[in-house]
Length: 123
Image 1 (spheres, helix red, strand yellow):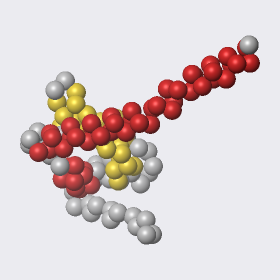
Image 2: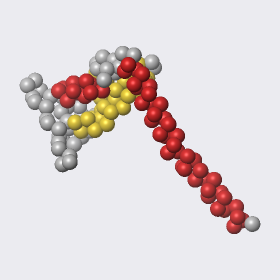
Image 3: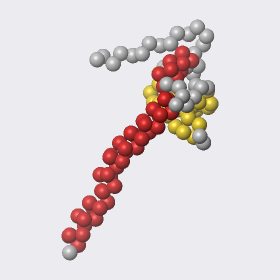
Image 4: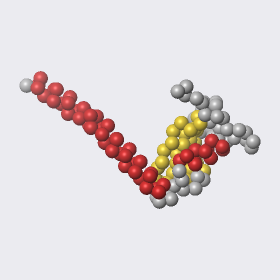
């Protein structure tokens, strides 16, 4: 009888893992819809505008961008990879682009320093 129960228990243990991808896709879709609604309502600035400002101000390139809502405030959290390879994170007010806080060895550009052109992906 235990030979019948073991496979059932194994399948039962895997059930949440099998269901997770569809629930993650649904969450991503809701996040995308919330972000679009916030942009259309004028509550946040477009990410492309924010990225252009970040590229002018900081050394490196953005490798991850997240839009979050914290205590009623929209925030962009950006991870930046500078030439020295030591990733740093900055948090910006998504409505104004104002710097709120940072973590890691933040590298700002010096006045007159040109932004590094984006690397080609070879495609």
